Image (tube, rainbow, N blue to C red; front, top):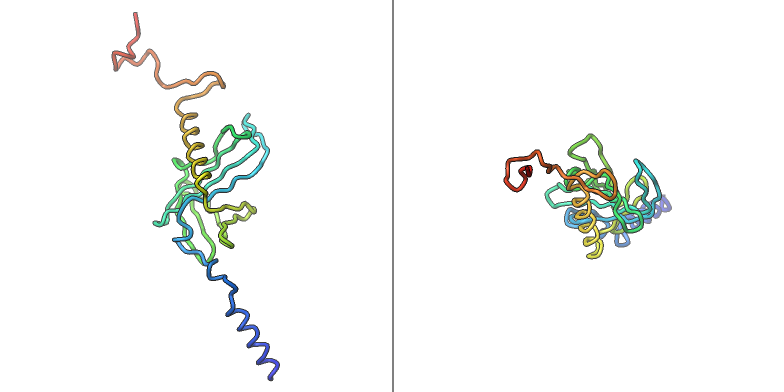
Length: 176
């Protein structure tokens, strides 16, 4: 009976001594902000080839945010798969798990928090963005906006919706 009591005390004392694990408890204050994963991945899809991926999640304190994926060939943006204009999210925290729901779909994503990092089920690791990473994400977003300001038919010409048939403004009226 004494050995059972000692075993119980040992088990309790080891669980009471969390070895600093209180710092690993996820709170909204720890989660709020931009989280980034920047990794090598080579793939081709729809005529676009990339060698690098920059993914980010923004978590706001009010439970909303967004998700973005930027596809790069070295340092050149070649495409996106989600962005802050299209993939708004809501999230909840339960223990050290963040469940993210994309507002425009039925897709849920789960991230696990440990050691100051977030990890998705595939093993992608996100860290709180550094100043440099924040600047990179903003640069990529601005490049994406520029790429989508018109329609592209090839890499040399960008078409916009403006043409000579618009006559609502004198500057765009057809010349005779």
